[in-house]
Image (cartoon, rainbow, N blue to C red):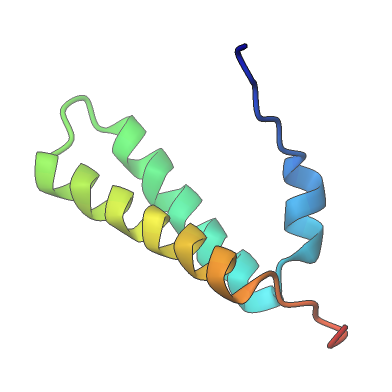
Amino acid sequence: MEMELHADAGALLGHLSEDQRRRLDALDAAYMELLSDSAPAKADVEALADAIVAFYDEVSKTGVEHENGA
């Protein structure tokens, strides 16, 4: 049986703290910068991949931080 995982990005973003959203925005900007380069350096791609994995790993361990403290 094949299983597909779907995530509601809007729901996730709504539960991130302001700091987490800033960090995610920075990762998104770095990704867009890499896409604009016709031949991004392998080291840059690997560094961004590591940063993305670290971000989501941290969120999965600490959970999302509600800004209202809930």
